[in-house]
Length: 277
Image 1 (cartoon, helix red, strand yellow):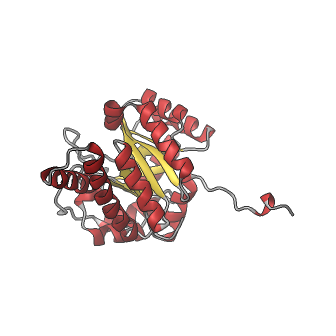
Image 2: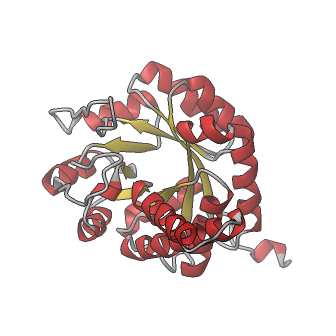
């Protein structure tokens, strides 16, 4: 038997998410908007030997350009010694999601819950070995009001109709909230987890106390989206560096990168993915 024959198979991003669901831990999806934030995410994953989702939002793509951010993410992914999953978050149109897949994103999430719109996107994702995250329920985000279905049993039918691989659900969190005052509905999470074997996704996790995030991971949430808390760490460190007299962007951006990495490492341990790479 040759050396090549004994090498373990490369696991896809969906493989890692399924393993997290089965293993009672979660993979963090951290948002990147530029070089330094992306580097902080990858460095945290390397330091903790954790798989991680490097997440680019549609809003970030408006700022930095989808192709440019894809190239950045793919470059870091190729150089990393741990699994880096490149994911497009909150795509507002199927066209943008399809563009992301063409650029090399492994996973995409489309806003909206129309199975007829989601199915072609799922097919495109699966054709290249990727996955589709579907928004079964809306977690409140700015002008987007929260949306929760009354009967958790409809989750399984939605998954079947949409052909999706991950399901974003509403457990009581909120996007862009700085205070950790949200309380998750664990009875509802157990009912949703019983309705499908698919990995569940929690959006707006910065609003949730850390012990509740860990408990949610144990009950079926396999992808946890975190942006605001890490952004605050980055911005605070940049502000401190500027107040200290820093003038070179490399100096204050490096301070932000280091602070964000520390915070990301902490969450990777909280969610139980450290050491799972």
